[in-house]
Image (cartoon, rainbow, N blue to C red; front, side, top):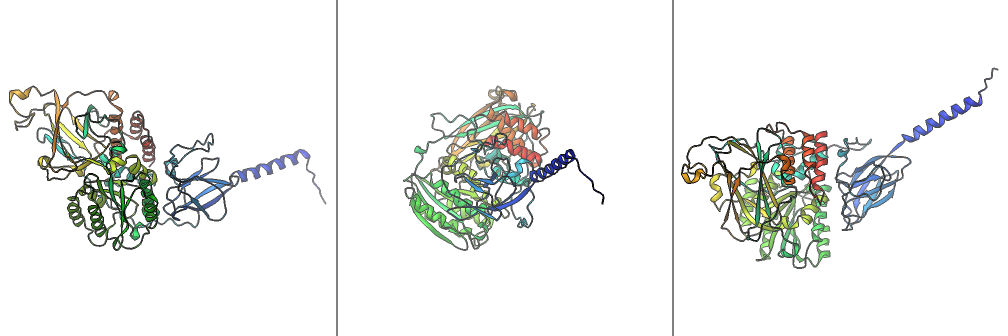
Length: 616
Protein backbone atom coordinates (compact mmCIF):
# COMPACT_ATOMS: atom_id res chain seq x y z
CA UNK A 1 0.00 0.00 0.00
CA UNK A 2 1.24 3.39 -0.93
CA UNK A 3 1.29 6.01 1.82
CA UNK A 4 1.66 9.78 1.47
CA UNK A 5 2.71 11.97 4.33
CA UNK A 6 1.79 15.62 4.71
CA UNK A 7 4.36 17.97 6.08
CA UNK A 8 3.59 20.05 9.16
CA UNK A 9 3.81 23.21 7.03
CA UNK A 10 1.19 21.88 4.63
CA UNK A 11 -1.00 20.89 7.57
CA UNK A 12 -0.91 24.45 8.85
CA UNK A 13 -1.89 25.78 5.43
CA UNK A 14 -4.84 23.37 5.13
CA UNK A 15 -5.97 24.08 8.67
CA UNK A 16 -5.78 27.82 8.04
CA UNK A 17 -7.76 27.38 4.82
CA UNK A 18 -10.50 25.46 6.66
CA UNK A 19 -10.66 28.13 9.35
CA UNK A 20 -10.96 30.82 6.67
CA UNK A 21 -13.81 28.93 5.01
CA UNK A 22 -15.56 28.52 8.33
CA UNK A 23 -15.11 32.20 9.18
CA UNK A 24 -16.33 33.28 5.76
CA UNK A 25 -19.39 31.04 6.04
CA UNK A 26 -20.21 32.42 9.46
CA UNK A 27 -19.57 36.00 8.33
CA UNK A 28 -22.23 35.66 5.66
CA UNK A 29 -24.62 33.50 7.68
CA UNK A 30 -27.98 35.23 7.92
CA UNK A 31 -31.34 34.14 9.26
CA UNK A 32 -34.81 35.38 8.61
CA UNK A 33 -36.49 36.92 11.66
CA UNK A 34 -40.14 37.86 11.55
CA UNK A 35 -42.85 38.96 13.93
CA UNK A 36 -45.50 41.49 14.88
CA UNK A 37 -45.26 44.74 16.85
CA UNK A 38 -48.52 45.56 18.65
CA UNK A 39 -49.83 48.23 21.00
CA UNK A 40 -49.94 46.73 24.50
CA UNK A 41 -53.21 48.48 25.35
CA UNK A 42 -55.10 48.26 22.06
CA UNK A 43 -53.77 44.78 21.15
CA UNK A 44 -53.52 45.98 17.54
CA UNK A 45 -50.56 46.00 15.19
CA UNK A 46 -48.51 49.21 14.96
CA UNK A 47 -47.84 50.59 11.50
CA UNK A 48 -44.31 51.95 10.74
CA UNK A 49 -42.66 50.94 14.02
CA UNK A 50 -38.87 50.71 13.63
CA UNK A 51 -37.20 47.35 14.20
CA UNK A 52 -33.41 47.67 14.30
CA UNK A 53 -30.69 45.09 14.89
CA UNK A 54 -28.72 46.23 17.94
CA UNK A 55 -25.18 47.48 17.28
CA UNK A 56 -25.79 47.79 13.54
CA UNK A 57 -27.43 50.00 10.95
CA UNK A 58 -29.66 47.16 9.75
CA UNK A 59 -33.38 47.57 10.27
CA UNK A 60 -36.85 47.81 8.79
CA UNK A 61 -40.34 49.13 9.54
CA UNK A 62 -43.57 47.28 10.24
CA UNK A 63 -46.34 47.12 7.65
CA UNK A 64 -50.01 48.05 8.08
CA UNK A 65 -50.64 44.94 10.22
CA UNK A 66 -47.59 45.45 12.45
CA UNK A 67 -45.69 42.68 10.64
CA UNK A 68 -41.94 42.86 10.02
CA UNK A 69 -39.19 40.67 8.70
CA UNK A 70 -35.49 41.19 8.24
CA UNK A 71 -32.26 39.30 7.83
CA UNK A 72 -30.20 39.12 11.03
CA UNK A 73 -26.62 37.81 11.26
CA UNK A 74 -26.27 34.83 13.57
CA UNK A 75 -23.88 36.70 15.84
CA UNK A 76 -26.48 39.44 16.52
CA UNK A 77 -29.05 38.46 19.14
CA UNK A 78 -30.94 41.63 20.08
CA UNK A 79 -33.56 43.79 18.35
CA UNK A 80 -34.48 47.36 19.31
CA UNK A 81 -38.08 48.39 18.63
CA UNK A 82 -39.10 52.06 18.69
CA UNK A 83 -42.25 54.03 17.94
CA UNK A 84 -43.20 57.61 18.89
CA UNK A 85 -44.89 58.00 22.29
CA UNK A 86 -44.21 54.35 23.18
CA UNK A 87 -41.53 52.91 25.42
CA UNK A 88 -38.57 51.47 23.53
CA UNK A 89 -38.11 47.70 23.82
CA UNK A 90 -34.95 45.57 23.52
CA UNK A 91 -35.83 41.93 22.83
CA UNK A 92 -33.86 38.78 22.16
CA UNK A 93 -34.04 37.37 18.65
CA UNK A 94 -36.25 34.26 18.43
CA UNK A 95 -36.49 31.63 15.76
CA UNK A 96 -40.29 31.50 15.94
CA UNK A 97 -42.58 34.35 14.90
CA UNK A 98 -42.09 37.07 17.51
CA UNK A 99 -44.84 39.06 19.23
CA UNK A 100 -43.56 42.36 20.64
CA UNK A 101 -45.78 44.67 22.69
CA UNK A 102 -45.03 48.39 23.04
CA UNK A 103 -46.57 50.30 25.94
CA UNK A 104 -47.89 53.82 25.42
CA UNK A 105 -45.77 56.27 27.41
CA UNK A 106 -46.98 59.66 26.14
CA UNK A 107 -43.52 61.14 26.61
CA UNK A 108 -41.33 59.60 23.93
CA UNK A 109 -41.03 62.16 21.16
CA UNK A 110 -37.82 61.45 19.33
CA UNK A 111 -36.52 62.42 15.91
CA UNK A 112 -32.74 62.02 15.78
CA UNK A 113 -31.02 59.49 13.51
CA UNK A 114 -28.92 56.47 14.33
CA UNK A 115 -25.17 56.74 13.66
CA UNK A 116 -23.92 53.43 12.19
CA UNK A 117 -20.29 54.47 12.57
CA UNK A 118 -20.37 54.97 16.32
CA UNK A 119 -23.20 52.48 16.99
CA UNK A 120 -24.68 55.02 19.37
CA UNK A 121 -27.68 53.35 21.01
CA UNK A 122 -29.44 56.42 22.38
CA UNK A 123 -30.66 57.20 18.86
CA UNK A 124 -34.29 58.05 18.28
CA UNK A 125 -37.12 57.35 15.87
CA UNK A 126 -35.90 57.73 12.32
CA UNK A 127 -38.56 59.55 10.30
CA UNK A 128 -38.00 57.50 7.20
CA UNK A 129 -39.00 54.23 5.60
CA UNK A 130 -36.55 51.67 4.32
CA UNK A 131 -36.81 53.03 0.77
CA UNK A 132 -34.71 55.96 1.97
CA UNK A 133 -31.71 53.66 2.06
CA UNK A 134 -32.06 53.32 -1.70
CA UNK A 135 -33.79 49.94 -1.97
CA UNK A 136 -36.76 47.98 -0.72
CA UNK A 137 -36.02 44.49 0.56
CA UNK A 138 -37.68 41.56 -1.18
CA UNK A 139 -40.07 39.59 1.04
CA UNK A 140 -38.85 36.34 2.57
CA UNK A 141 -40.15 32.99 1.35
CA UNK A 142 -43.80 32.16 2.10
CA UNK A 143 -44.78 35.78 2.87
CA UNK A 144 -47.66 37.06 0.74
CA UNK A 145 -47.42 40.61 -0.59
CA UNK A 146 -50.40 40.67 -2.93
CA UNK A 147 -51.76 44.27 -2.84
CA UNK A 148 -55.46 44.96 -2.72
CA UNK A 149 -57.15 46.60 -5.68
CA UNK A 150 -56.32 50.31 -5.76
CA UNK A 151 -59.37 52.58 -6.06
CA UNK A 152 -57.84 55.83 -4.79
CA UNK A 153 -59.48 58.88 -6.34
CA UNK A 154 -58.17 62.41 -6.97
CA UNK A 155 -59.69 65.53 -8.51
CA UNK A 156 -58.10 66.19 -11.92
CA UNK A 157 -55.71 69.15 -12.00
CA UNK A 158 -55.07 71.18 -15.15
CA UNK A 159 -51.95 73.20 -14.44
CA UNK A 160 -52.38 76.98 -14.58
CA UNK A 161 -51.17 78.51 -17.81
CA UNK A 162 -49.60 81.85 -18.62
CA UNK A 163 -51.97 84.84 -18.77
CA UNK A 164 -51.34 88.02 -20.78
CA UNK A 165 -51.71 91.00 -18.48
CA UNK A 166 -53.26 93.32 -21.06
CA UNK A 167 -56.01 90.74 -21.69
CA UNK A 168 -56.48 89.41 -18.11
CA UNK A 169 -55.04 91.86 -15.58
CA UNK A 170 -56.87 90.32 -12.58
CA UNK A 171 -55.98 87.10 -10.79
CA UNK A 172 -58.46 85.93 -8.13
CA UNK A 173 -58.27 82.90 -5.86
CA UNK A 174 -59.19 81.53 -2.44
CA UNK A 175 -56.49 80.81 0.13
CA UNK A 176 -55.60 77.20 0.94
CA UNK A 177 -54.08 76.11 4.26
CA UNK A 178 -54.55 72.38 3.71
CA UNK A 179 -51.45 70.21 4.02
CA UNK A 180 -52.86 66.84 2.97
CA UNK A 181 -51.13 66.62 -0.39
CA UNK A 182 -47.62 66.76 1.09
CA UNK A 183 -48.03 63.90 3.56
CA UNK A 184 -49.89 61.85 0.94
CA UNK A 185 -47.09 62.41 -1.60
CA UNK A 186 -44.61 61.44 1.10
CA UNK A 187 -46.51 58.19 1.64
CA UNK A 188 -46.21 57.29 -2.03
CA UNK A 189 -42.51 58.13 -2.20
CA UNK A 190 -41.68 56.17 0.95
CA UNK A 191 -43.39 53.16 -0.59
CA UNK A 192 -41.14 53.43 -3.61
CA UNK A 193 -43.76 54.89 -5.98
CA UNK A 194 -44.19 58.12 -7.89
CA UNK A 195 -47.47 59.73 -6.75
CA UNK A 196 -50.27 60.27 -9.29
CA UNK A 197 -49.93 63.73 -10.85
CA UNK A 198 -53.36 64.75 -9.55
CA UNK A 199 -52.28 63.91 -5.99
CA UNK A 200 -49.65 66.67 -6.20
CA UNK A 201 -51.21 70.00 -5.25
CA UNK A 202 -48.27 72.38 -5.24
CA UNK A 203 -49.83 74.99 -2.97
CA UNK A 204 -50.38 72.34 -0.27
CA UNK A 205 -46.77 71.19 -0.57
CA UNK A 206 -45.56 74.76 -0.09
CA UNK A 207 -47.94 75.50 2.80
CA UNK A 208 -47.02 72.31 4.69
CA UNK A 209 -44.00 74.05 6.23
CA UNK A 210 -43.58 76.73 8.87
CA UNK A 211 -42.04 79.99 7.69
CA UNK A 212 -40.50 82.86 9.60
CA UNK A 213 -42.94 85.57 8.51
CA UNK A 214 -43.54 88.44 10.89
CA UNK A 215 -47.03 88.49 12.36
CA UNK A 216 -49.53 91.38 12.25
CA UNK A 217 -49.00 94.45 14.40
CA UNK A 218 -51.45 95.99 16.82
CA UNK A 219 -53.86 97.28 14.17
CA UNK A 220 -56.29 94.43 14.77
CA UNK A 221 -55.98 92.65 11.43
CA UNK A 222 -55.88 88.85 11.68
CA UNK A 223 -52.85 88.53 9.39
CA UNK A 224 -49.88 90.36 7.87
CA UNK A 225 -48.74 90.46 4.23
CA UNK A 226 -45.22 89.89 2.88
CA UNK A 227 -43.97 90.17 -0.70
CA UNK A 228 -40.63 89.52 -2.44
CA UNK A 229 -39.61 89.61 -6.10
CA UNK A 230 -36.60 87.82 -7.55
CA UNK A 231 -35.38 85.67 -10.41
CA UNK A 232 -37.20 82.40 -11.15
CA UNK A 233 -34.90 79.39 -10.57
CA UNK A 234 -36.70 77.10 -13.05
CA UNK A 235 -36.90 79.67 -15.87
CA UNK A 236 -34.15 82.28 -16.13
CA UNK A 237 -36.29 84.37 -18.48
CA UNK A 238 -38.90 84.90 -15.77
CA UNK A 239 -39.16 86.47 -12.33
CA UNK A 240 -40.90 85.03 -9.29
CA UNK A 241 -43.27 86.94 -7.01
CA UNK A 242 -43.57 85.52 -3.50
CA UNK A 243 -46.70 86.51 -1.53
CA UNK A 244 -47.31 85.39 2.04
CA UNK A 245 -49.93 85.83 4.74
CA UNK A 246 -49.05 85.20 8.37
CA UNK A 247 -52.00 84.56 10.65
CA UNK A 248 -52.01 86.03 14.13
CA UNK A 249 -50.38 83.60 16.54
CA UNK A 250 -52.26 82.73 19.71
CA UNK A 251 -50.83 81.30 22.90
CA UNK A 252 -52.63 78.23 24.23
CA UNK A 253 -53.81 80.30 27.19
CA UNK A 254 -55.54 82.72 24.77
CA UNK A 255 -57.56 80.04 23.01
CA UNK A 256 -61.30 79.92 23.75
CA UNK A 257 -62.83 76.68 25.12
CA UNK A 258 -63.56 73.98 22.55
CA UNK A 259 -66.69 71.99 21.79
CA UNK A 260 -65.25 69.14 19.72
CA UNK A 261 -67.14 66.24 18.16
CA UNK A 262 -64.98 63.46 16.72
CA UNK A 263 -66.77 61.76 13.85
CA UNK A 264 -65.06 58.38 13.45
CA UNK A 265 -65.43 56.11 10.43
CA UNK A 266 -65.53 52.56 11.88
CA UNK A 267 -66.66 50.82 8.70
CA UNK A 268 -65.02 47.65 7.41
CA UNK A 269 -62.70 49.61 5.11
CA UNK A 270 -61.07 51.16 8.20
CA UNK A 271 -59.78 47.85 9.60
CA UNK A 272 -56.24 48.30 8.31
CA UNK A 273 -53.65 49.30 10.88
CA UNK A 274 -52.91 52.65 9.20
CA UNK A 275 -56.59 53.60 9.40
CA UNK A 276 -58.76 53.24 12.53
CA UNK A 277 -55.95 52.11 14.81
CA UNK A 278 -53.79 55.06 13.75
CA UNK A 279 -56.80 57.38 14.12
CA UNK A 280 -57.29 56.16 17.69
CA UNK A 281 -53.65 56.81 18.49
CA UNK A 282 -53.97 60.31 17.00
CA UNK A 283 -57.01 60.99 19.20
CA UNK A 284 -55.06 60.00 22.27
CA UNK A 285 -52.50 62.67 21.40
CA UNK A 286 -55.21 65.31 21.30
CA UNK A 287 -56.60 64.14 24.65
CA UNK A 288 -53.26 65.11 26.22
CA UNK A 289 -53.80 68.70 25.00
CA UNK A 290 -57.33 69.16 26.38
CA UNK A 291 -58.10 71.63 29.15
CA UNK A 292 -60.86 71.25 31.77
CA UNK A 293 -63.03 73.81 29.93
CA UNK A 294 -62.87 71.81 26.68
CA UNK A 295 -65.51 69.21 25.82
CA UNK A 296 -65.15 66.17 23.58
CA UNK A 297 -67.80 63.87 22.13
CA UNK A 298 -67.35 60.86 19.83
CA UNK A 299 -69.78 59.81 17.11
CA UNK A 300 -69.10 56.67 15.05
CA UNK A 301 -70.61 55.52 11.81
CA UNK A 302 -70.55 52.29 9.84
CA UNK A 303 -73.85 50.80 8.63
CA UNK A 304 -75.48 53.28 11.01
CA UNK A 305 -74.37 56.16 13.21
CA UNK A 306 -74.27 56.34 17.00
CA UNK A 307 -72.83 58.21 19.98
CA UNK A 308 -69.93 56.43 21.71
CA UNK A 309 -69.06 59.29 24.05
CA UNK A 310 -71.44 62.12 25.03
CA UNK A 311 -69.86 65.57 25.53
CA UNK A 312 -67.21 65.03 28.20
CA UNK A 313 -64.94 67.66 29.81
CA UNK A 314 -61.20 67.51 29.28
CA UNK A 315 -60.81 66.98 33.03
CA UNK A 316 -61.92 63.34 32.49
CA UNK A 317 -59.18 62.05 30.13
CA UNK A 318 -59.48 58.43 31.28
CA UNK A 319 -63.16 58.29 30.31
CA UNK A 320 -62.30 59.71 26.89
CA UNK A 321 -59.47 57.21 26.40
CA UNK A 322 -61.75 54.29 27.30
CA UNK A 323 -64.24 55.41 24.67
CA UNK A 324 -61.43 55.68 22.11
CA UNK A 325 -60.15 52.20 22.92
CA UNK A 326 -63.64 50.69 22.59
CA UNK A 327 -64.02 51.51 18.89
CA UNK A 328 -63.75 48.65 16.40
CA UNK A 329 -64.15 48.56 12.61
CA UNK A 330 -66.78 46.62 10.66
CA UNK A 331 -69.71 47.13 8.26
CA UNK A 332 -70.58 49.48 5.41
CA UNK A 333 -70.13 53.26 5.43
CA UNK A 334 -73.10 55.56 6.08
CA UNK A 335 -71.01 58.73 6.13
CA UNK A 336 -73.91 61.11 5.51
CA UNK A 337 -75.82 59.89 8.57
CA UNK A 338 -72.73 60.24 10.72
CA UNK A 339 -72.18 63.82 9.55
CA UNK A 340 -75.77 64.76 10.45
CA UNK A 341 -75.49 63.25 13.93
CA UNK A 342 -72.10 64.85 14.64
CA UNK A 343 -73.32 68.32 13.65
CA UNK A 344 -76.50 67.84 15.69
CA UNK A 345 -74.45 67.02 18.78
CA UNK A 346 -72.17 70.03 18.15
CA UNK A 347 -75.18 72.34 17.79
CA UNK A 348 -76.83 71.06 20.97
CA UNK A 349 -73.72 71.95 23.00
CA UNK A 350 -72.74 75.04 21.03
CA UNK A 351 -70.39 77.49 22.81
CA UNK A 352 -71.29 81.05 21.66
CA UNK A 353 -67.81 82.34 22.51
CA UNK A 354 -65.97 79.09 21.91
CA UNK A 355 -64.55 76.92 19.18
CA UNK A 356 -67.22 74.57 17.81
CA UNK A 357 -65.86 71.94 15.45
CA UNK A 358 -66.51 68.50 14.00
CA UNK A 359 -63.33 66.47 13.35
CA UNK A 360 -63.95 63.79 10.73
CA UNK A 361 -61.54 60.82 10.60
CA UNK A 362 -62.07 58.57 7.56
CA UNK A 363 -60.67 57.14 4.34
CA UNK A 364 -63.52 58.87 2.50
CA UNK A 365 -65.00 55.68 1.09
CA UNK A 366 -68.69 56.45 1.75
CA UNK A 367 -71.07 53.90 0.22
CA UNK A 368 -74.38 54.04 2.14
CA UNK A 369 -76.96 56.84 2.24
CA UNK A 370 -75.78 60.30 1.16
CA UNK A 371 -72.50 59.47 -0.59
CA UNK A 372 -72.36 61.34 -3.91
CA UNK A 373 -70.21 64.47 -4.20
CA UNK A 374 -73.31 66.58 -4.87
CA UNK A 375 -75.27 65.16 -1.96
CA UNK A 376 -72.38 65.52 0.48
CA UNK A 377 -71.69 69.06 -0.72
CA UNK A 378 -75.27 70.17 -0.11
CA UNK A 379 -75.30 68.47 3.29
CA UNK A 380 -72.08 70.16 4.45
CA UNK A 381 -73.14 73.56 3.08
CA UNK A 382 -76.34 73.33 5.12
CA UNK A 383 -74.57 72.26 8.27
CA UNK A 384 -71.89 74.98 8.16
CA UNK A 385 -74.60 77.64 8.58
CA UNK A 386 -74.78 76.60 12.25
CA UNK A 387 -71.35 78.13 12.91
CA UNK A 388 -69.75 74.72 13.44
CA UNK A 389 -66.45 74.36 11.56
CA UNK A 390 -65.03 71.14 10.11
CA UNK A 391 -61.60 69.50 10.18
CA UNK A 392 -61.01 66.44 8.00
CA UNK A 393 -58.31 63.88 8.84
CA UNK A 394 -57.65 61.34 6.09
CA UNK A 395 -56.25 57.86 6.73
CA UNK A 396 -55.17 54.81 4.78
CA UNK A 397 -54.46 53.79 1.22
CA UNK A 398 -55.79 51.60 -1.55
CA UNK A 399 -59.36 52.92 -1.43
CA UNK A 400 -58.51 56.46 -0.28
CA UNK A 401 -60.88 59.14 -1.62
CA UNK A 402 -58.83 62.32 -1.56
CA UNK A 403 -61.30 64.14 -3.81
CA UNK A 404 -64.16 63.68 -1.31
CA UNK A 405 -62.02 64.69 1.65
CA UNK A 406 -60.85 67.90 0.00
CA UNK A 407 -64.41 68.73 -1.04
CA UNK A 408 -65.85 68.22 2.46
CA UNK A 409 -63.20 70.41 4.07
CA UNK A 410 -63.63 73.17 1.48
CA UNK A 411 -67.40 73.27 1.85
CA UNK A 412 -67.39 72.89 5.63
CA UNK A 413 -65.36 76.00 6.50
CA UNK A 414 -62.51 73.76 7.50
CA UNK A 415 -59.09 72.29 6.85
CA UNK A 416 -57.82 68.95 5.61
CA UNK A 417 -54.81 66.86 6.59
CA UNK A 418 -53.65 63.38 5.59
CA UNK A 419 -52.25 61.33 8.49
CA UNK A 420 -49.61 58.88 7.26
CA UNK A 421 -48.18 58.12 10.70
CA UNK A 422 -48.16 59.15 14.33
CA UNK A 423 -45.53 61.82 13.72
CA UNK A 424 -47.90 63.56 11.28
CA UNK A 425 -50.75 63.23 13.80
CA UNK A 426 -48.55 64.98 16.36
CA UNK A 427 -47.76 67.76 13.88
CA UNK A 428 -51.44 68.40 13.11
CA UNK A 429 -53.01 67.86 16.53
CA UNK A 430 -50.22 69.01 18.86
CA UNK A 431 -47.66 71.24 17.15
CA UNK A 432 -50.24 73.03 14.98
CA UNK A 433 -53.23 72.68 17.29
CA UNK A 434 -54.22 76.40 17.27
CA UNK A 435 -54.17 76.52 13.47
CA UNK A 436 -55.97 73.20 13.09
CA UNK A 437 -58.79 73.96 15.51
CA UNK A 438 -59.10 77.76 15.84
CA UNK A 439 -60.19 79.86 12.86
CA UNK A 440 -59.25 83.56 12.96
CA UNK A 441 -60.57 84.55 9.50
CA UNK A 442 -62.95 82.83 7.09
CA UNK A 443 -63.77 83.21 3.39
CA UNK A 444 -60.35 84.73 2.69
CA UNK A 445 -59.93 85.76 -0.97
CA UNK A 446 -57.11 87.45 -2.85
CA UNK A 447 -57.36 89.54 -6.01
CA UNK A 448 -54.21 90.84 -7.66
CA UNK A 449 -54.28 93.43 -10.43
CA UNK A 450 -51.01 93.37 -12.36
CA UNK A 451 -49.55 96.51 -13.88
CA UNK A 452 -49.27 95.94 -17.66
CA UNK A 453 -46.62 98.64 -17.80
CA UNK A 454 -44.35 96.29 -15.86
CA UNK A 455 -45.78 92.76 -16.17
CA UNK A 456 -46.34 91.34 -19.64
CA UNK A 457 -47.62 87.95 -18.44
CA UNK A 458 -48.10 85.99 -15.23
CA UNK A 459 -48.78 82.44 -14.06
CA UNK A 460 -50.08 81.43 -10.63
CA UNK A 461 -48.17 78.37 -9.38
CA UNK A 462 -50.70 75.90 -7.98
CA UNK A 463 -54.12 76.78 -6.50
CA UNK A 464 -55.83 75.23 -9.55
CA UNK A 465 -58.70 73.98 -7.37
CA UNK A 466 -59.00 77.37 -5.64
CA UNK A 467 -59.43 79.73 -8.59
CA UNK A 468 -62.37 82.16 -8.44
CA UNK A 469 -64.11 84.27 -11.03
CA UNK A 470 -63.14 87.93 -10.73
CA UNK A 471 -66.69 88.92 -9.76
CA UNK A 472 -66.61 86.42 -6.86
CA UNK A 473 -64.16 88.63 -5.01
CA UNK A 474 -66.81 91.17 -3.96
CA UNK A 475 -69.54 88.57 -3.46
CA UNK A 476 -69.81 87.83 0.27
CA UNK A 477 -72.02 84.83 -0.48
CA UNK A 478 -69.13 83.11 -2.26
CA UNK A 479 -67.33 80.59 -0.04
CA UNK A 480 -63.54 80.70 0.26
CA UNK A 481 -60.75 79.38 2.48
CA UNK A 482 -60.28 79.69 6.24
CA UNK A 483 -57.17 80.85 8.09
CA UNK A 484 -56.27 79.28 11.44
CA UNK A 485 -54.32 80.87 14.28
CA UNK A 486 -50.65 80.99 13.33
CA UNK A 487 -51.28 79.57 9.86
CA UNK A 488 -49.24 80.81 6.91
CA UNK A 489 -50.40 81.06 3.31
CA UNK A 490 -47.77 81.29 0.57
CA UNK A 491 -48.40 81.88 -3.13
CA UNK A 492 -45.96 82.19 -6.04
CA UNK A 493 -46.47 83.95 -9.37
CA UNK A 494 -44.16 83.38 -12.31
CA UNK A 495 -43.85 86.73 -14.14
CA UNK A 496 -42.54 88.01 -17.45
CA UNK A 497 -41.39 91.57 -16.76
CA UNK A 498 -41.60 93.23 -20.16
CA UNK A 499 -43.78 96.33 -20.65
CA UNK A 500 -46.55 96.21 -23.19
CA UNK A 501 -49.08 98.95 -24.06
CA UNK A 502 -52.62 98.16 -22.92
CA UNK A 503 -56.10 99.38 -23.69
CA UNK A 504 -57.92 101.75 -21.32
CA UNK A 505 -60.34 99.59 -19.31
CA UNK A 506 -60.74 101.86 -16.29
CA UNK A 507 -58.71 99.62 -13.99
CA UNK A 508 -56.01 101.00 -11.71
CA UNK A 509 -53.14 100.69 -14.16
CA UNK A 510 -55.00 100.81 -17.47
CA UNK A 511 -56.69 104.20 -17.01
CA UNK A 512 -55.43 107.05 -19.19
CA UNK A 513 -56.07 109.67 -16.53
CA UNK A 514 -52.99 111.78 -15.84
CA UNK A 515 -53.26 111.21 -12.11
CA UNK A 516 -52.53 107.49 -12.58
CA UNK A 517 -49.67 107.61 -15.06
CA UNK A 518 -47.15 108.19 -12.31
CA UNK A 519 -47.74 104.72 -10.91
CA UNK A 520 -46.60 102.94 -14.07
CA UNK A 521 -43.18 101.43 -13.62
CA UNK A 522 -43.21 101.98 -9.85
CA UNK A 523 -45.75 99.34 -8.87
CA UNK A 524 -45.75 95.72 -9.87
CA UNK A 525 -49.40 95.34 -8.96
CA UNK A 526 -52.14 96.04 -6.47
CA UNK A 527 -53.34 93.35 -4.06
CA UNK A 528 -56.72 93.32 -2.34
CA UNK A 529 -57.84 90.83 0.31
CA UNK A 530 -61.31 90.12 1.61
CA UNK A 531 -62.00 88.17 4.78
CA UNK A 532 -64.71 87.71 7.39
CA UNK A 533 -64.51 87.49 11.13
CA UNK A 534 -65.50 83.88 12.03
CA UNK A 535 -68.70 85.10 13.69
CA UNK A 536 -69.76 87.54 10.94
CA UNK A 537 -71.01 87.30 7.36
CA UNK A 538 -69.90 90.74 6.14
CA UNK A 539 -66.38 90.91 4.74
CA UNK A 540 -63.56 93.35 5.48
CA UNK A 541 -61.21 94.70 2.77
CA UNK A 542 -57.44 95.23 2.93
CA UNK A 543 -55.34 96.72 0.11
CA UNK A 544 -51.61 96.70 -0.64
CA UNK A 545 -49.51 98.19 -3.44
CA UNK A 546 -46.66 95.86 -4.53
CA UNK A 547 -43.36 97.51 -5.42
CA UNK A 548 -41.48 96.70 -8.61
CA UNK A 549 -38.20 96.02 -6.80
CA UNK A 550 -36.57 92.74 -7.89
CA UNK A 551 -33.50 91.47 -6.04
CA UNK A 552 -30.99 88.70 -6.60
CA UNK A 553 -32.04 85.21 -5.52
CA UNK A 554 -29.15 85.02 -3.04
CA UNK A 555 -30.43 88.20 -1.36
CA UNK A 556 -33.94 86.84 -0.77
CA UNK A 557 -35.16 85.42 2.52
CA UNK A 558 -34.87 81.77 3.51
CA UNK A 559 -38.67 81.65 3.25
CA UNK A 560 -38.58 82.72 -0.41
CA UNK A 561 -35.91 80.22 -1.39
CA UNK A 562 -37.33 77.26 0.54
CA UNK A 563 -40.87 77.80 -0.78
CA UNK A 564 -39.40 78.06 -4.28
CA UNK A 565 -37.56 74.75 -3.81
CA UNK A 566 -40.77 73.03 -2.66
CA UNK A 567 -42.64 74.45 -5.67
CA UNK A 568 -39.92 73.09 -7.94
CA UNK A 569 -40.24 69.71 -6.20
CA UNK A 570 -43.98 69.66 -6.93
CA UNK A 571 -43.49 70.71 -10.54
CA UNK A 572 -40.88 68.01 -10.99
CA UNK A 573 -43.23 65.34 -9.58
CA UNK A 574 -46.00 66.55 -11.88
CA UNK A 575 -43.71 66.57 -14.91
CA UNK A 576 -44.57 70.24 -15.47
CA UNK A 577 -43.60 71.71 -18.83
CA UNK A 578 -43.00 75.04 -17.06
CA UNK A 579 -40.00 73.63 -15.21
CA UNK A 580 -37.28 74.26 -17.77
CA UNK A 581 -34.09 73.90 -15.77
CA UNK A 582 -34.57 72.87 -12.12
CA UNK A 583 -33.47 69.27 -11.48
CA UNK A 584 -33.40 67.21 -8.27
CA UNK A 585 -29.88 68.26 -7.19
CA UNK A 586 -30.82 71.93 -7.77
CA UNK A 587 -33.96 71.54 -5.66
CA UNK A 588 -31.99 69.86 -2.89
CA UNK A 589 -29.28 72.53 -2.90
CA UNK A 590 -31.79 75.40 -2.93
CA UNK A 591 -33.74 73.94 0.00
CA UNK A 592 -30.63 73.00 1.98
CA UNK A 593 -29.36 76.56 1.80
CA UNK A 594 -32.65 77.91 3.15
CA UNK A 595 -33.46 75.64 6.11
CA UNK A 596 -33.34 78.37 8.74
CA UNK A 597 -34.02 77.36 12.34
CA UNK A 598 -36.17 74.30 11.43
CA UNK A 599 -37.03 73.57 15.07
CA UNK A 600 -39.34 70.63 14.30
CA UNK A 601 -37.10 69.09 11.62
CA UNK A 602 -39.75 69.07 8.87
CA UNK A 603 -37.59 70.97 6.39
CA UNK A 604 -34.62 68.69 6.98
CA UNK A 605 -36.90 65.70 6.37
CA UNK A 606 -37.89 67.32 3.06
CA UNK A 607 -34.26 67.07 1.92
CA UNK A 608 -34.43 63.31 2.42
CA UNK A 609 -37.68 63.14 0.47
CA UNK A 610 -36.05 64.92 -2.47
CA UNK A 611 -33.37 62.22 -2.47
CA UNK A 612 -36.03 59.52 -2.47
CA UNK A 613 -37.81 61.11 -5.43
CA UNK A 614 -34.52 61.41 -7.28
CA UNK A 615 -33.80 57.73 -6.66
CA UNK A 616 -37.13 56.72 -8.21
